[in-house]
Length: 310
Ligand SMILES: [Zn+2]
Image 1 (spheres, helix red, strand yellow):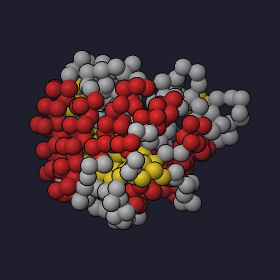
Image 2: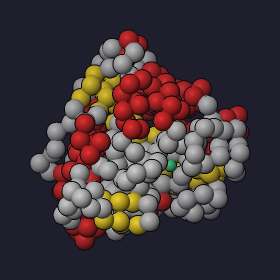
Image 3: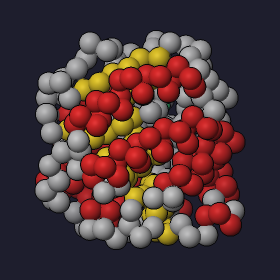
């Protein structure tokens, strides 16, 4: 049993334009960090485009929204979906491949081909709502993987932990009234997208824990210890997905939370300990944000190193 690492060079073909924080360099920096010998036993998978990928996306998104993402874009042009979400000619293919990767990871982990998986995908997904791409996100990779696990693999109870510094409004919208899916998020407030108040609780399945600007790793850990981790234990999931964003790092340009690499290692281990007791350790971690290239590479590699200890 091992940890799977999903990556494809075509993820670099989603071109967001000069100076955009969600750049292809993010994945190149992560890959450079994973060249160290400590990661030799990581099982690297280059995902294939799944035949059923559109059908899987339809589990979460409307056809009109899907058509918008898949519209033809010429090589010398960009089409803006919102102020900071651009389509280039390689974007649709990258987005379909990202969904294919996370669903393949679900399939392999559910079929016990691996303990857990990390998907280094672009574009990210957690802001994408059923009817709208937004906030650097085209399709909601984690929400689609969750519906795929539920509807195709008959996994009953799924927990999503979203530690990206921004609230996963899209994921919350998809599962807001679904008692079989637990969604918990820590996120800076105020910050983009403006949702994620503690009062947004769904049908008791949503736990939002806002962080004030400047909060430290110790304050972050306290909130997990007292709110999210006990709720996760009580929910007792059959599978855990992570919306793994690393933009709460102290050096990230898009937020002002003060996490360091050790905070991500700590959280990964805590979630793994719970996963071991409730779902045989089954975790699929999916990259969301993280925009300081060096902090991102350090934190993702540290996160993966902990996953590899399963
Ligand atoms: Zn983010």
